[in-house]
Image 1: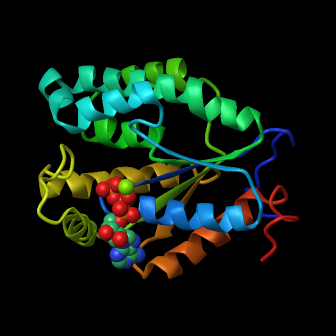
Image 2: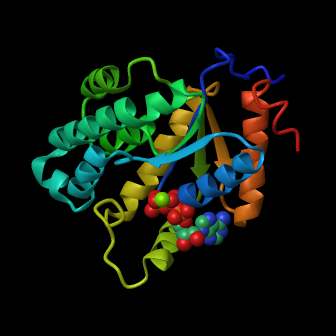
Amino acid sequence: MSKNAVQRPSGRGRFITFEGGEGTGKSTQIKKLADRLKAARMRILVTREPGGSPGAEIMRHLVLSGMGKLLGPEAETLLFAAARDDHVRTVIQPALNQGAWVLCDRFADSTRAYQGSLGSVPIGLINAMQRVTIGDLKPDLTIILDLPVEIGLQRAAVRRGTGAPDRFESEQLSFHHGLREAYRKIAAEEPKRCVLIDANSDPDTVADRVWTALRERLLPATASVISA
Ligand SMILES: Nc1ncnc2c1ncn2[C@@H]1O[C@H](COP(=O)(O)OP(=O)(O)OP(=O)(O)O)[C@@H](O)[C@H]1O
Ligand SMILES: [Mg+2]
């Protein structure tokens, strides 16, 4: 068993979050992991932030349309917190209590990186909001996808086609470089919870890296079902 393997009460599911900058492949990799776990007959819930519950999806729209930016960084952080509070209470925690594995596309580390490191929101406010919204609900595993900024933005631009970039995609290049550094710092500071994955390969190769990290970190819970 890996020295970082997670010990949890057997009835509870596992909470896995995916983090990283724009276009690093979070949504692609979540889908691949969900398919693999479902094939192993595991109960999986895929969700995302901001959003993930009906109330929080309304706030997602506000934030990504740029409305939150007009209110200023602190108020934008409060909007994210309100969305997370609803998402955790109505979706994530109930699913974990029922034994499902929850795969979440972005979570609290995105707040630390975007609003904390780059939005200059005081860490005290971010910590206070985190206590209110997620309490003790720490992810069992956080996959941080790491990719040169230019490649991530290029991937996001190809996916977008002729559509307009969203509120964060349209930030300056320096913002995205800062974002990558912020995520790398989080991974270095919390090595038990976080795994930094090199995302600069084809999707299946990256998926194999994610799979290896999952098997190493979440054993023995996964040993009997995903020994492939
Ligand atoms: N490993 C990869 N190699 C090449 N292209 C990829 C790879 N992974 C994903 N893509 C493509 O890059 C684009 C962005 O991927 P994806 O939507 O998964 O990223 P994301 O991290 O979820 O982005 P966002 O932060 O905008 O939500 C998509 O068009 C996807 O098909
Ligand atoms: Mg995505």
